[in-house]
Image 1 (cartoon, rainbow, N blue to C red):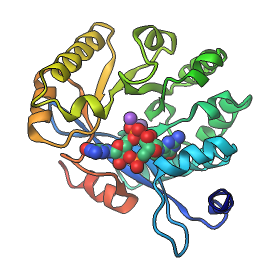
Image 2: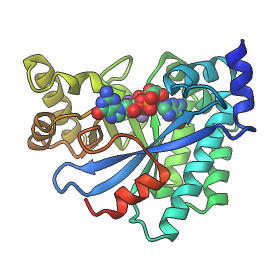
Image 3: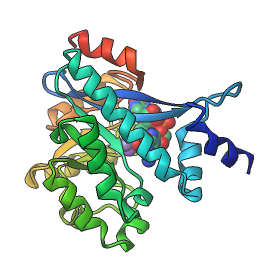
Length: 254
Ligand code: G
Ligand code: G
Ligand code: MN
Ligand code: NA
């Protein structure tokens, strides 16, 4: 398709860019991390949402070079920020199951860590549970190897799809992200509140950090903070920001 051809060229034409969404400590409101979110701005065209082009990249295999570019660029940016004096926050990068399934996934990611010089313990790989990753049982030793290199693993969109308690143990995740769907109706839906409270209690007993996504209101933030949620990500604190704006946010001493 035309869009596939365009995406194929996007890397060489330098049309991909990264935004960074602040992650905030619920108790202190200090900046604790950034989620890397890719953007595609084709020349002379409107911005294409990753919700559209990531699935296309996955179908066509382009997710491999695109995902590698994203990880390298994000690590380079992080190292640059540290040299400029930014605090040593966490850097969370979404990783597609298709990337993990590649035979040389671990080697490629380790090489990027070494080449960029980023502190591996600051890197969080956000994985999503899916049939693809369940079937590829070799994902588990791969993630284990990366954990031994110091990286952290986070389960994205927790509570949707196939994610379960067993899966958290299996992948030895360090943290989980409560899916936006559960946060949305938090203030007025008793059932959603029960689910979120149960996830928080379960995570605490498993000694997992919890980050809530899609937090847009003070009511949602207050509820999560009082229930012991560790970190908050959402428009209430900030939308995803271009690199320069993120650096300003980080320096602004929230
Ligand atoms: O940023 P936005 O909310 O529009 O992202 C939409 C979807 O695209 C989200 O599900 C997000 O996880 C995914 N996405 C954004 N950036 C990346 C990325 O760098 N890699 C992968 N694999 N998915 C991404
Ligand atoms: O699926 P994943 O969690 O990787 O994607 C995160 C997506 O959520 C990003 O595309 C980002 O733009 C979006 N997002 C982040 N904060 C909020 C929010 O507070 N509300 C809504 N509606 N979307 C958000
Ligand atoms: Mn994510
Ligand atoms: Na998510």
